[in-house]
Image (cartoon, rainbow, N blue to C red; front, side):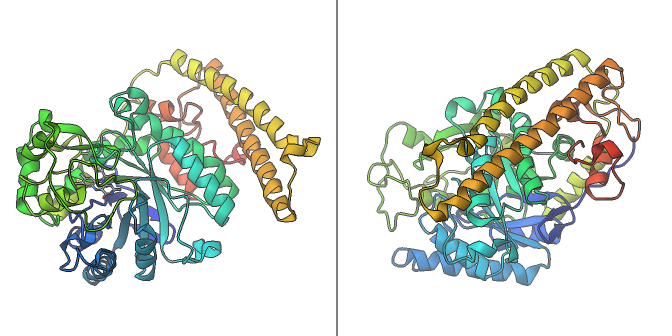
Length: 502
Ligand SMILES: Cc1cc2nc3c(=O)[nH]c(=O)nc-3n(C[C@H](O)[C@H](O)[C@H](O)COP(=O)(O)O)c2cc1C
């Protein structure tokens, strides 16, 4: 078995030596200490802004300023400690979203990760017509292909620019989850399932903007083998939270890390957060008290979350999480990923990264390739997808051509709208073109099934892993060769000139 080197992760002009992003963890869990250690170890370190001002002396009187000041200081501290890549995580759901985005851009944070809501709007203080020229890159966090599509479509239209990468967070993550409670354990919403859907959803935009948009997966990734598995499925990076809490450099107090060390599988629970979303956390006395109906008394200094019904919620989540960070778990609780019960020691970030690199290196690169691929299974998937596309193409075609068909309801009312309308039409036709190309690839794959060459890399002759075929049943190349093609290290064969046959 050959040793595999982790690939680099490029987001815009920034390049991390290893494709590992440390997930932003709010209310003081990931600040400059953890973020700079991760960046120094070759990954992307992320400062979380949620509740960042909670530890400032003037938090009760000047919350907004306290947040901005704390963020500015943390970015400056992190940059003083590392030359690596530093990101900032900002929740769309917080009331001072605009201020914090502006502040992070002013401080030249390398990358902004925007989650907990759809980042459709960006602050007007940014040069919205020249977003691509900013040194700061923008990465939304989504939990479905639908959300990715909405964001990409809206950015393309509003800013003539698309995000620089996307994080897809699955249902095993810690903290707030972008799923309904009943979806969390439903296999249809598993990360393995939503990753290829997101990749497919953003592909047309990558082509339209001639830009490669790395997809980064999050939620439940624990070992180097997990990282390898998701890279085989088409991810270009991973975002990890839980593993980084269990490090010496994590900015939480020791008691918070002890909660990770001491919990069992049955202690990891889904809670209804006052934010209105489910969240994953470690069950403790505080959560027991709340679930038995006790209402904690608190005074809301400032409505930090847009959606918080602070007069009726049973407790203040910002306060509970701030207490937990400081080790007071009688008056707070720790957010945690589904795999937290596997944590058995606190190590340094460097040790953790070295372990992950080693595990990745020796993880079975040909994990499924020795197995006989179930051809009938893939034939059925290809046939189903072909059917779907045939339906889609005619639907899109009809919609796009309506405007020129004399359908008055879709005529632009104002001259300024004319461009938008043309854009929509060209966009829809562009989409259709992509669907057609995919259709050709599917036909090609079905032909290879007939010729009994399906599942073998056209360029190298090695078997294509089953995991890759699950994600991309029309794949003609193994993942290693496809990467080389993407990086321009090898040239495409004639019939692949339309790209995306990888
Ligand atoms: C303690 C904790 C706090 C978190 N806080 C945030 C946050 O403020 N914003 C956010 O977008 N995600 C937050 N997350 C999610 C992480 O950034 C990450 O995506 C997730 O934990 C990945 O799953 P894993 O823990 O299984 O690796 C948090 C997770 C944890 C464990």
